[in-house]
Structures are given as structure tokens and as C-alpha cells.
Length: 215
Image 1 (cartoon, one colour):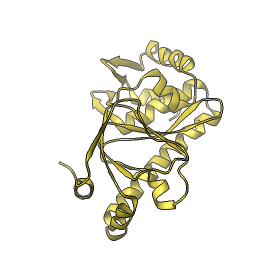
Image 2 (image 1 turned 90 degrees about the horizontal axis):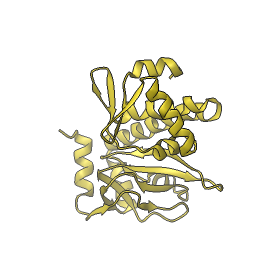
Image 3 (image 1 turned 30 degrees about the horizontal axis):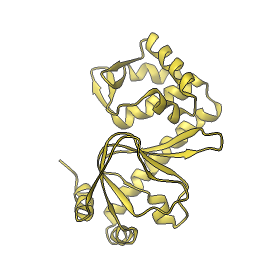
């Protein structure tokens, strides 16, 4: 059952039309003024940076109940990121001023948003440590570990990541090429740490993964 904050947000965004997008559609481009604040009803959206060499780095993944782009909305700075659907997505879009006014008058909702933002920052900082100093294996393991914690469901000692991630998606999270990422994923499969069930990645033993890569 949704918590009180989720119910309040659903009520806030409900008057606005439900928008549906296919996987891989760009919702907001870097430097473009966002048309409002999006609230995710279903599906997943990634926030990423695009570098001059064409490489993409996923900075955050938004799940149902999240709303974005709040950095742009709260700081009033130009938007610097791309937002793209990772799956089929249904969402609603409300005017920025309406959402900000609501947050100012509902401290419990603002506090929940702050928790979400800080949780995302914590995950990003953890990944950055390995992006700058870790091996390719550690970078892929870190991406899997964060996804398992954020989107995983436990089945005995295994954790099923309830988000259909491709090798390219993991590459975008780990800052590697798809080819290198595929090789590292195969290594983890051979070591018995990773498998795939239908379209979902399964970390077979999260504790072993954490111990092996000191996560």
C-alpha cells in the first residue's frame, strides 16, 4: 500500500494527463529548458551525461514514485543532463511553480524528496570511487551492487534485479565500453556470482560479491 507521501504526490499530479513513452525515448535534453516536473507512474528513467567523445555515463535511475528534474527546479540553474526512458514509461507532468509551491507548504514531502536526493548522491559517490580508481571488474561489480540494493528482490541467497538491464545499460553505469562490460559480466557468470533469469540479472550471492570487491 502506498505511503502517505506517495499518496500526496499522486494527488498533486493526478489532474495532469498520463503520458506514455516507449523504451529509449529522450524526455529532456541537456541545456534544453524542461517543460515541467515529471512524476513516474510506471517504468524507469535514467539521468545521464554525454561527453564530447560520445560516451554516456548514467548518474541516476528514477523508479515509480520519483519526480524529476528537481536539481533544475530547486536550484534554478540550467539543466545539464539528459533524461531517457529505460523501459516503457507512464508519467504525468506538472508546472514547476506548482510543484515548488506544494513542497514549500508540505515539509513531510520535502523531507522525503531530500532523502531520495541524498540516497542518490550516496550511490553516485560510491560509484565514483571505483570509476576513478577501481578496475573494470570493480566498476561493473559496483554498478550491479547498487542496482541490487535499489531494485532487487531477495530469493533465498540470490537477489533478482527487477529492472531489465542490458550490457549497454551496465556499461553506462560503470563508465566502460559495452565490449569491456560484456567480458566482465561473463567473468562474474563463470565465477558463479551472476546469472540471468529471463531478462533479469540475478546476483547469486550478494555477500560474496561484496567481499570479493570490498563493496
